[in-house]
Image (cartoon, one colour):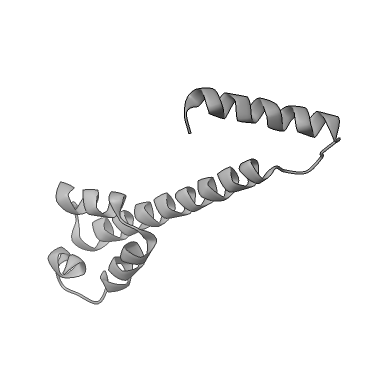
Length: 94
């Protein structure tokens, strides 16, 4: 959404809330919170995966570090599940 429309939208929402004595979280706020929580969870899972990789194999090459940092939750969970089942860091990602 263009910035000007976004500002107008938020102004209208605030006005609506004041006029109607809305004391609950707005849909936009709820969606923002949910996205923030999901992003936080994904980052935490990625950090844990990297920590486990470092503990098991030592230094994690930048290429693998980048893969973890840009991966979705499913990939991170799949890789994390392999860390203590394989003998090399390459096997985690294959």
